Length: 328
Image (cartoon, rainbow, N blue to C red; front, side, top):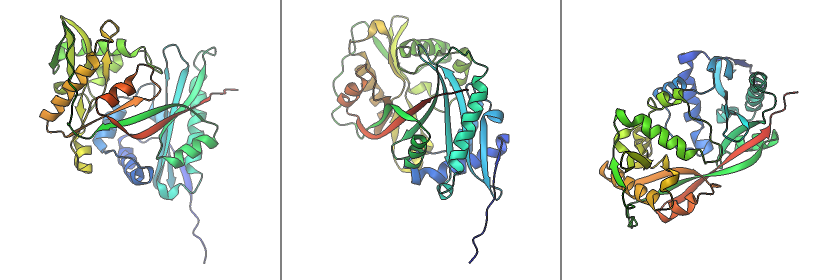
């Protein structure tokens, strides 16, 4: 019996017409990759309205097999504080087409595009290629390794499965924790968080463009924020949010305690613990039954110890891969 030959072609981004293709590829890969996430056209539209250092019309590639879109990739860049200029990429392909070299071809095309982009950046900069993967994304991890990428960092996803035994976390003297935020303090919250995160590995400078884009993100839910005030100063905060569509798909009631920050003058006083405990109460009042967060497992601030003490447990690990960008 003759095997039917197929034709694989590669093309550029077609704008909003590609949003459904992207959703289908993301959702069609979830089971194979062990992902728990919900992607809709609205999610994609929101994300691609707020891309940083990326023009999807030049910085994406789509793969088609006999006219059907089966994969796509994208690249972008950022300059890290005290670190290299980082060029990130990903390549997604439906599981039934991973026996071929389509995903490798997308990755290599993204690398080629990055070399074009980097040619316009200062030659004295250290430049690296970067990609992330969950430990369950074995096909992608193996491909990255075969292409010369090495693991440089680990991340963790953590969940507190219930509200049992929440520690007693007193608020430091002189601090007032308030729930919610209004438009008149958005900039103050943004600046406080950016200042606090400058100490973290892999951070880049915050920009005014990002500030306005941040307010359009689906996870921007100021009514759930917990902010610590010392007079008129924001000492720290947790910018909580809920992914309602994800909760519906997976039959759970999970709130996210993300963007946990404390500014330098207020550290080592137990403020982070108090903010997290207040965030649990916010999620309880919203009807949630559990909380989740992600973190850099190599963070030297003691965050992992703190989150474990607050009842979070690791459920999944991720890896960050890098390799030098050679432009010659």
